[in-house]
Each structure stands twice: as C-alpha cells, then as structure tokens.
Image (cartoon, rainbow, N blue to C red; front, side, top):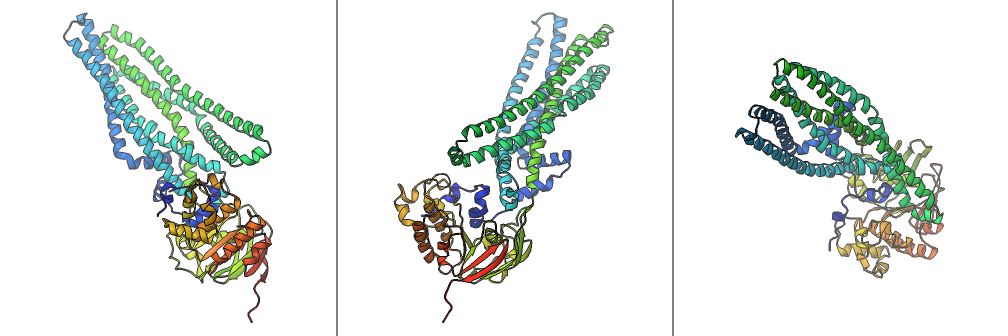
Length: 605
C-alpha cells in the first residue's frame, strides 16, 4: 500500500525542522520563477517596482488586459453621462417640459449607461477577484520555493516570524495591489484624459485654468503622503514581530505554563497588537485624509470655474447646456484625481512589502538539487581533510579537522557542548560550506556532486525529533517517496518500533499530534530511526539519538540499533557513555579540534 504523505504535505516549512529531517530527506530546488522574478526587479525604487509588478502580472496578462478593456468601456460610459446631461438640460431649457419626445430617449440613454456601468463593474470585480487569488497562491508558492532553496545560515540570522510574515502578509499586500489598485490606474487615467479633452472642446480657457490646479493636487499628494512609506515599512516590521511572538509563545507554551508567565506573555502580545493598531490607525488616517483633501481642492476649483463661467454665459461665449456638461466633466474629473491620490498612498504601502520580498529573493540560494555530477552508490568511507568552519559573528566552530572513517565503521563523536560535533554532520550533508578544507566520501569531493545524490545517501536521527501531525505511517514513510506498507513495517521492526505501534489505538493509522506530542520521547526516537532506516542509507547520523531515553529504554534502543547499523557508516554524536557501546572508535572534539581518538575494538589477532 502506498502512502499519501507526499500529496498531503507537498511543502512544509519549519526552520528548526528543516535543519535536520527535511534537508536530509529531500533536496532544495531553486525556483525558476523566483530567478526570473528577481532578474526583472532591480534595486532602483520606481523602475524596479514597476518591473516587479509587471513580472507578477505577466502570467495573467490576458485576463488583466480584458479587465483593462472593461475598465476602459466603463470610463467611456462615465464620460458619456455629462454629454447626455448637457443635452437633457438643453432640451429642458428650450422645451420647458419633459413631454418632448427627445427627452425620454435621453433619459433612457442615461439609464442604459448606468446599467452598463454596473454590469462592467461586476465583470471587473469577478475577473480581478479570481486573478487576485491566483496571484496570492502563485506568489506564496514561489516565495516559499525560494526560501526553501536558501542555506540554513539565512534562517539562523533571522526570526522565524519575519519569514512567516512574508508568506502571510506581504504576498497579500503585493498581489492585492497588482490585481486591484495597480490596474485601477487605467480607468482613472482614461477618465482624466477624457474629461480634460471634452472640457477643452467646450471651453478651452476654462479647461486650461482647471489644468493649472493639477500641480496643486500633486503637491498636496506629496505633502500628505510623505509619511506613508516609512510608516508602512515600520508597520510591516511590527507585524513580523507580532507573528514571531505568537509563533514562539505557542511553541514555548509548556515552559510558559510551568513558570506561570501567562500574564506577562499575554501583556507582551497585547502591547505588540496595540502598537500595530496605533500604526495602522495612523496610516489609515493619512490615507483617509489624502483623497478627500485632494477632492476638496478639486471641488473648490470647480466652484471657482463656475464663478468664471457665469461671465462666459453673460457674454454669450457659452450656452447653459455647455456649462452643465462642462461642470459635470469637471465634477467627474475630481473623482479620478482623488482616486490617484489614494493610489499614491497605497503604492507607498506596497513598496514596503515588495522591498521585503525582494530582499528575501535577492538572497543567494543553494545550488539546485541536481547541479553537479550524480554521486554513485557509496560504500561510506568518509574523510575530512583540514576542514575549518566559522559561523557568522562567532568564534570558529571547527579548526583544521582531519578525520578518516572507514566504510561500515561506527564512530562515536564526543565532546562538550559547542565543541563542533554537530557541525561535522552539517558539513557532511552540505547544510553549510567549509571555510577551508574539503570532505570526501569514497574519495569523491562532496562539493562536486549534486545535493540530491549526496543527501539521498545520508540518513539522520536528530536529538530533537519533530514529527508531522499525521499518522505514524506517514511519518515513517517521509523517509522515502511512496514506499509500500511492507517497507514501512520492515523499517519499524528494524527500529524496534513495530510492537508499540501495533498497541496504539489505530496502529499505523494513529494520529500522533503536533511534533509527535502523543508519543513518548523514546517512541518518537524509534519512529525517527525507522524513518531514517527506510531510506536504507549507507551513511547514518545519530545526533544525541538516545537523549530522550531512560537507561532501560536506551538499552533497548541500542540493541535495536546494533542490528540496524550493521553494514552502515555511522556518526554517533553523543554525551552518554552507554551509547558508545555500539561504537568501534571514539573521536573526542574540543574547541573545534580533534584532541583524541580511541579504539574500542580489540586488536586483530
């Protein structure tokens, strides 16, 4: 029976989990879309923003173009209303009654135009709503794929909340702008151009006066909107902090309850939410004031134009009907001008979100999983040659380490915390790159082979086992795509997990909760070992794999491991002397250096 884990969990992101299990089970892929998206986006503020937005809209250009056509038709309908209004005023002034046969036609035309506008608005809302959802889904997938392709050092230097905010907030801001605000500029500009054109045809002098007000509108937009961009940037940062606090506190809930710190953490979370509320209110106040302020100035201009037009009528240069049409066009002009002011404010907001996304997409990723020669099936001989490694901002983790491990040998690696034990395993899987030296497996420099072919031959059982909130079967099956039930049970038996699994309420179909919380620590370790063994890797890393066991459970685990480790090269990272019973040699590491090697096997006769 095949497992459905690959279908149920196509993408799972956890910065802590990915450091061991996920990276050892799969290989990172660089998203071609992310590369293309980044290549279109420069660092220049305005042109880069436009290029990025066009890159986001490109896959949906046909639908967006059709939507733009509907918006243009909507603008044309809106521009026809003032003309018909002027004709209606002309008929009323001359006929003095609604009984004229022309008047019902004009009124019918107005009603038809209003209905057409409503229908076009519905079509646009339907089309753009669908596009917005697709852009959100596409952008989230592409950003996630790129995040997954980044090296671990990226996540070590950032809060998880900052990364989650990219996927839960920023992508919605950007995609909403692309499908809504950005495209809405089209009808606004068309309406402005059309209104100005007809105003010039009716009365050029008054139209020119109205156009003089536009620089005043622009100045108002710049003054009022000046504070939006830095405010939007800070709002994004505080939102990320809120996500980080929530994610951390939910993960630390047992500790919070144990130390009765619920009131403190609740207050900390409340203060952060209140800060976001204050910033959001401040941003909303500016954006809410921008449009009405511009619209008021435009309306004041219309009043002034009306005063000037009264003289034009008295002098016979303008008919009352033309005046009605002119004023309706001027009034129509105020709405898109105010709308453009809103667009300006929203553009400053989206720039903050887009800049965060671009910074993440600009981060250099790992090589694609299949770049490099495929490593052939290995026997498992490992050689570290003068390997050094430094974590950013910390003292060297490893210093010129040279170590050779024979194929099929189990080597216990011991030493104090921070000595560099786990770093050796990270470097072996190319989760980090050595700052000096090289690592060879069967004489092959691992830096020359593809990540997929390297990591597929290495299994790992970490100290802090994190399991998916799904069945025992799916968790074990994560070690290899689509295994049979027989394969899963064979791995569980090898890990001494089969018996306790059968005693669970639903056996292999038992749900184990978030991170395996419904299993004991020892059971979690056995499931993790079964998952690693299902890969059948020639190289196996046990990183404090018995840390969760009591002495009896540790003995049972080691007895299971003794059989499972046969024929494999094993790096046994441990602090517990009992675990060394299965080792052939012990390598002691202190302060990033190998300080001693001891053989535990009797010399050959």
